Length: 111
Length: 114
Image (cartoon, rainbow over all chains, first blue to last red; front, side):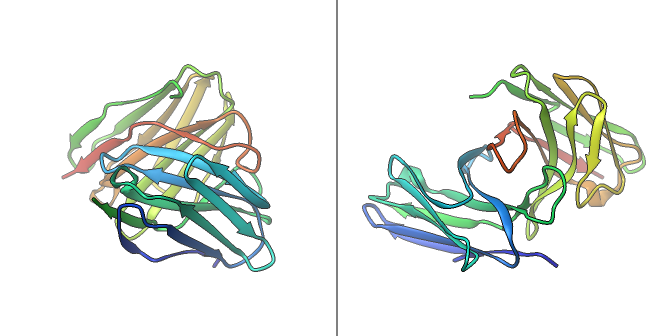
């Protein structure tokens, strides 16, 4: 079965720290999405990427297609970054517009 | 924020009753999706639509049906609700396929089936 694995499951950091969340997947993909779910439950898309690197503010997403791995980095973390971060992929073999999601990484940033 | 709403936001129902959840968008986006989110499983696709009257199944479609008679509305129906369908349901929209564009999510609907 095609799988998406995220690590760590839980991460606690101090304000200002550099944070890395990892996503690995089992077979080839067409694209990878990073999402953020706020404590209140709302979900926001952060990035979609199929190669290389994207940056938005303090967030950086990278992907290594050969190694089947993506990372989400947060620089100068802040308590408002506390959320669940979710990785999702669309498999190369998939027809249609179906995403497969990881279970998420719970990030807590303490002041 | 994309104009996407879900109704109702909370619902309690009894086993065996039919339930319909509504997703409404004002963005004229082609694609619409229904997901459920459960502890230990993350988000899972139930059904999605790639146009009016064009729908396809996701990985957990059993027990659910959908309809899209106009661009702005995507309905999810539980014909006969079961306790295993207690979940948080999210609708999402996108202008293009998931290979090309991110999705915008609605606020979610909490469904409790007793």
